[in-house]
Image 1: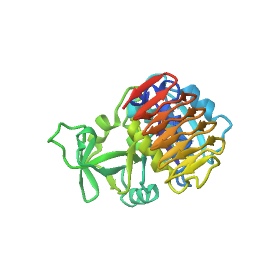
Image 2 (image 1 turned 60 degrees about the vertical axis):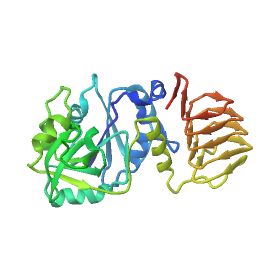
Image 3 (image 1 turned 135 degrees about the vertical axis):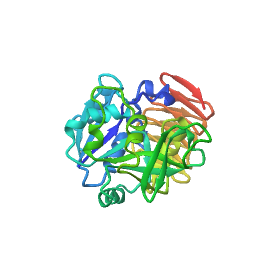
Length: 318
C-alpha cells in the first residue's frame, strides 16, 4: 500500500529558518519531520510517495541511498499544484486505497483503526477529524452516523457546521483521485471534498493530540511531543531536567538542559541553561539562558534569549 506525503509547501510561517532548510527536513527531536512520518507508517504501507515542490534537490539528496524500511518515491511538481493537484500528480504510483498526509502535521491518530473503519464502511474517502473550539480557520464537516454530509473549507465565523475539523490525514480510493484534473492547481478541500460529501465520504474522529507544526510555537510543541519516551537520561557536562534529548555528539560543559529541550548534533555549549527550546546542528553557546527558542543551524550565541528564532538567514521574535 502507498502513502502520499504532501511536502511541497514553502514553510513561510517558519521563515527565516526555512530559507535554508525545507520544512519537511526540519528535525523533530533530532529526526527530520518527513522521515519521522515515514517510519511511523504501519507496516502494510510499504511505499511512501513524497509530493515535492520547494526543496526538491535537498529532498533528493537526503534520501539518496538511505534505507528507512520503506520504498521512497519522490514526485516533483514543476509548479505548485495545490493539495489536490499534488495528489493527482502521484496517481501513476497508486495501486489501491491510499493514505495521504499533510507533511507538517503530527498527531496521535491510529491509522490502522482508521483503515479498518474505511474498509468496513466501503467508503470512497475517510478523513481524520479533530474537535476544536474555533473551527473557522480550518475545513469543517457535518458528521452524522460516521458519514460526512457537508464539507466547508474555512467558513466565515458563525457559519461553521460543527467543531469537527479536517485533521490532514486521509484514506482515499482511486476514484477520488481520478476526480482531480491533471496538471492543474486544485485544492482537494475546496474543489473535491464538498462534491463527495454525502456520497461516500466518511469521518474518523480521534482524541489525543493534533499539532500543525508550521509556526515557531507549534514547531516547538511538535518537538516536545516527539520526545516521547526517548528522552536522554544523562549526558556528560549536563544537568538533565525533565524530558529532553541531547544528541550523542553534543559537547556540553556545566549546562542545565530541560525541561523540554532538544540539543542537536555537533552542538558545543558551556554554562548555558536551555529550557523549552530546540538547538539545531552546529550551534555554539556560552553563558546564555535560553527559553522557548529555536536556534541554528551553525549559530553562535552568548546572550540570554526568549521566544526567539535565530537562523543563518535572520532573526525573529515570536
